[in-house]
Image (tube, rainbow, N blue to C red):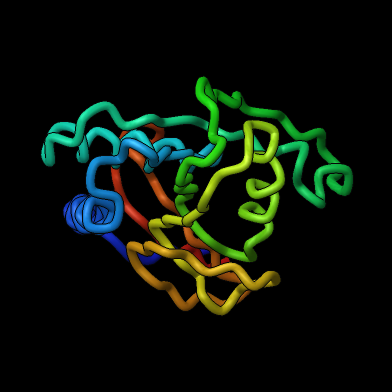
Length: 179
């Protein structure tokens, strides 16, 4: 098993700032916009973007929630090991709000399909967008595309894209793992 660096910590930081600027261009004041990090790994990206928007671009009080999709997945009863749920933390109504789903890697699209179902428990958004750090564009099982993407990666099926976050893994970086 070998590993190739796709993005260094510096490149991740540059991409995060670019994504934050794209969000500002589209949403301006964020008064009707909610960021929702998809558990578990999208939360790190969502928190980092919120911090950049508030500290570097003086965007006031962005609402951020975490959405666990474990029991909305179409494969949750098909695994040998029991799945462990994460925490959903959405302390606001999403009714008529613009929701931006945030995840680290868009692969087959199944997680996003699950998130679309799960968010309905909190109201009916007026609009839903998708922001991902890595878009594995040739791997879709569903017709789902990101509105904002950090980087496109062309990886074949036996290759895995791993995103490391300093909050969880001790460093920022994106790696292609070849098995």
